[in-house]
Image 1 (cartoon, one colour):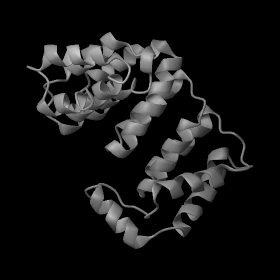
Image 2 (cartoon, one colour):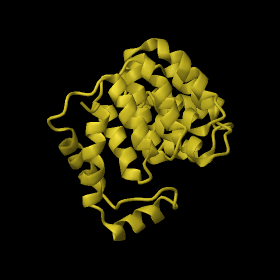
Image 3 (cartoon, one colour):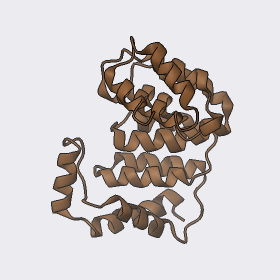
Image 4 (tube, helix red, strand yellow):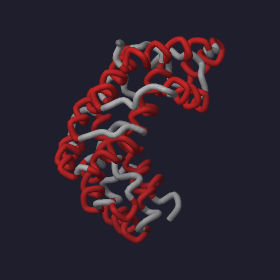
Length: 224
């Protein structure tokens, strides 16, 4: 009998390719700065087809998910990586899955996959397994900007459970980063946390205006 990964891929590829829209694919590829080829599927359709692909199949275990995700990352069209992000959001992952997440965060890296992985998958995993916080500390200082962005954003949905000291320390450590995606992540993380504790964010920004980029400050204070 074929593995769960084989069964998923045998459905996934033809189902997605059947809905391909070459004209839309060109538009998507141009919007993403020609980083990846596309089939031309809008995200709502990706999500709908993802449910169809998985319907009736055994619930994938962690090893199945690892195999599915890595095989999706080997496929050229970007929608297959979107599918992988979707099934990871619904998967039951243990701490041993974090190295696989590191692999896909640092491979074919762009905001469209890194951000949902950071805010939904990595964030949920670290919250469920606090021992992984040490890895976030390492990622926050990593030379790979996508790992650093993931660390900055991983608490985005934590609300009152946010480790404020850690969030602020990550932002301060990368405040001078020259890349747009890090500066934007700092502002986004601070702006989102301001929904929970606006006074803390206002105080942090006021105390660090001399090191934060104008972009980070503008984003952080947008709703303050």
